Length: 352
Ligand code: MAN
Image 1 (spheres, rainbow, N blue to C red):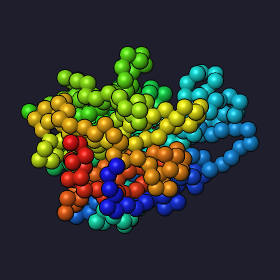
Image 2 (image 1 turned 45 degrees about the vertical axis):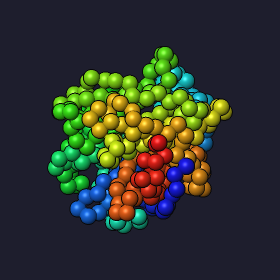
Image 3 (image 1 turned 180 degrees about the vertical axis):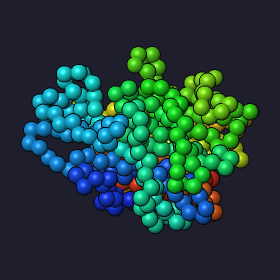
């Protein structure tokens, strides 16, 4: 386990006002992070559900083109609860989320505390984003800051790209990876002439372990030259793996933090999410130079062990500090946003 030199819960659902008075905020988590004009900025995923309770019914939110936020009220007997996040509609066999998500800009000053919850929002604008936009990862490339994000809709779970220079206006670049693919992180520079990304396709036919893949692109929009990177093989990562924050360049190569989950073994209970790291070749990140088979960060603090989805530590952003420090921003229990500071040399040493 990595030593946590510093740790703090930065943001809880109660710190935010809902986007509409008839909704309630249930999560402010999975933050992207970047240093910008001397401030640490986070793009936090905010999850909301209808505040109203109707006896024997469940309200499923959805963003509708030309209409905005809408709620589909279904009878409790028309759906099956899968886990706290998901229901299956019996008539269609299709799943829906019990909340919708959008992104909110948060200022953190030196990165260790909450400075301002801004009014800047990035929300659904297309049908393929109707159940929300989630889990951004920010990467500065040249003079723009890019972020990948997950978009969820009746068409499935995709990863799309947007960018900004000022964190006031955002340009959308469309879908990069079709269903089902999430946990996409961009490397901050061209490597051997091409941009590179780690992505996480989900296979319907289980020939493989859960895997992360690497892809290359000449323009950040068209991705090809796909290669498998790593399949989760240890017990703590045998259900899912996925990239955490964008890779960090060190003198030994790229360090990629990633999450893994194990099945809980209990129906309707999500398994524990822990994290480890890979060291990737600086000039060919498809080559793994070292890895830790053990989880390096696992749920420990109360706010990681308890919440909407208990037992989840989900890092999605980092900022480097002086004195060998790395601030890791993460979602805690799909409820709050927290930061921990670890030592970069301790992290590298853990990779062997
Ligand atoms: C999983 C979880 C949820 C997320 C959906 C869709 O169920 O990660 O938080 O909303 O996938 O991406």
